[in-house]
Length: 112
Length: 108
Image 1 (spheres, rainbow over the protein chains, first blue to last red):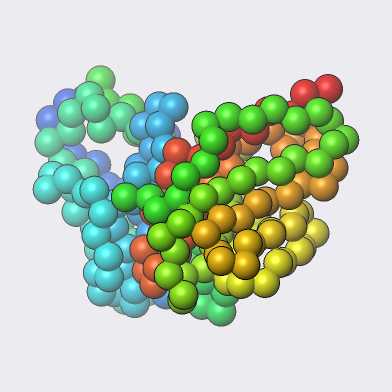
Image 2 (image 1 turned 135 degrees about the vertical axis):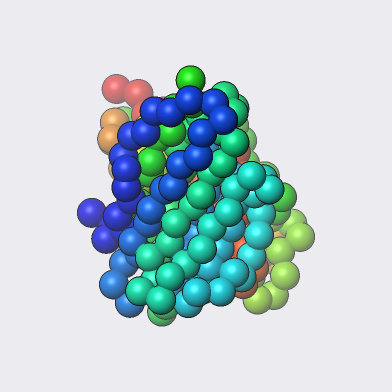
């Protein structure tokens, strides 16, 4: 157990819809990273937050947005969903002392 | 984009050492080398990291060349449960981008 919690674990929705994925980092970790992993693909970095502020941006589509709240949990919002958005979405928090990432078990999104 | 190059796949016999290479020829002086692995579709798992010196922990050893342009992750006695995709990452501040990794298959 990494200490990072992601919900929901599975989500099935239709094209054009909007979903929100939630991530609770490990206690004490201020940084949250979001990654997308499509079937048999590598991990694509989407965005990173540190203590509520956006710190780094990767290949995140304009239809996607994220935020980190004062209690440090983070949400990834995916809108106008397309079939190609079907993927595993991972959240990770970064340890303050060593800088290693601790990953959650992911949210599997299926867009039909 | 990832700053590392890894072979796409490798095989290793169970009980033998698995040596996974990574090339990071453009690494700069303050960048760390991190290794993670991902078993099937689980969340990636941290293995080890280093800056200049070789490192060892309960999971693996990390050998970094003197010029820091490449490194090798060593799993000393590979087991079937070590079958996974192994990612080598060069960390630049907040940037933690994963490449395609090496798919290691441990065979009986």
